[in-house]
Amino acid sequence: MESQPTITQPIQTSGVSAASAVSAIMISAVTVTTTPVVAPLHNLSYVEKPEKFTGVNFKRWQQKMLFYLTTLNLARFLTESAPLLTDGEMDAQTVSAVQAWNHSNFLCRNYVLNGMVDALYNVYCKAKTAKELWESLERKYKTEDAGTKKFVMAKFLEFKMIDSKTVMSQVQELQVVLHDIHAEGMVLSETFQVKREN
Image (cartoon, rainbow, N blue to C red; front, side):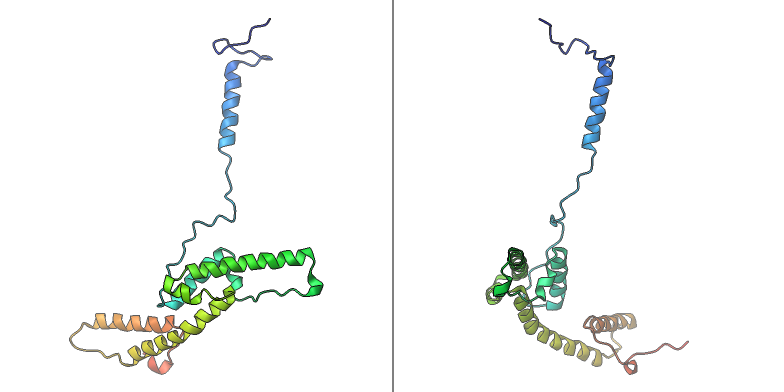
C-alpha cells in the first residue's frame, strides 16, 4: 500500500515543484478575486428618494419625483393610460404585456403616494392609476402655483430702493426676486429691464 503525501513531504508531479504549484494556485486565486463584479441593473438603491410632499413647493417636489421615477424607469406611467384588452386580443403575449403594465403602474402609483405625508396619502390613495393620481395633483397644486407667480410679480413691481439699506443688499434682494420670476417660467418685458449702455 502506497503512502499518501503529507504536508511535510514535498509534492513532486511531472517535474513541477511544490513552489511552482503553490505559485500557480495563488495566481489563479488572485485572478478569481480581482475579476470585477457587475451590479445588477435593477439595483437602484443609490437613488435618493425625494422628501415627502407636505402640500407646499409642489413644483420642486414634482420635479424631484419625476427624476426619481425616471431613474426607476417608471415615469412613463404618469402619462400613459391603461391598455384595454378586447375579446380578440386574448393571446398569452398580450395578456402578459397588460399584466406587466399593471404591475409597473402599481409600483409607480405607490412610489408617488409614498412620497406624500400621511394626510395627503389618505386624500389621494383612491386614484386607480398613476396617471390619474399625477393629474389630480397637478390640477390641485398648479393652480396654487399661479398664485405664487402673481405673488412673485407683485414683489417685483412693488420693489423700491430705500436709503436705510446698502445698495448692494438691495441689489441682491432684487436679484433674488428676478431669479424667482425666471424660476416660475415668466419672462420680463424689455421695458422692465435696465439695459447697460457701453
